[in-house]
Length: 234
Image (cartoon, one colour):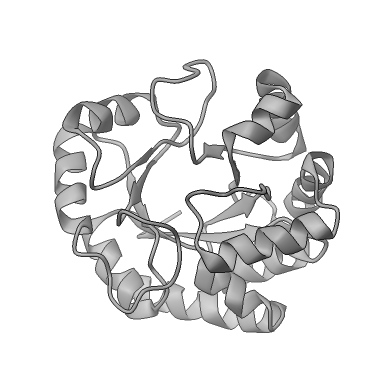
């Protein structure tokens, strides 16, 4: 990976391996793979709707792990990061989930509602927000797996008209408290927003808008991701 990192979020589904391959072809450095959950508190309407469709199509944990295996076969060495919620791991088994996900090709894990310090034996990417204390940011940086996910705003995921004004302060605090790479997500949808966020951090995560583009197919997603890649490399 060179320059600014581009993480693209996709919901696990039958078509996801092909979409992930298209995202990587467009310039994604990491694919975040959503494992659907019935009450995704951090997610806005686009990701919620995608989760509902996935669940209606039968995408339970084992089907998602199978999707992860198929995606790994299509994207080579590209990092794949499942993202889900604690209840799913509780039901499946915490250690069993981590072992099975990594066996299926996961290179990381995000549990959106599991705070830093909880379940210290579970390797995962930690999230911090503008409301996080310095102590929480420091702990998250010490325990995160590879990079720290900066939630740019207080609220749910989803495209926004403007980049959150809270990112600059959060990024500055995180730089002061930890030396791990910082990737910003939530509310980033346009190439201009991606560039602005990347000026403050080491990479960006794009979810809701990527899912919307993916509804039009792999070619549309590839073109959209390429526009983000171009902005980050400019």
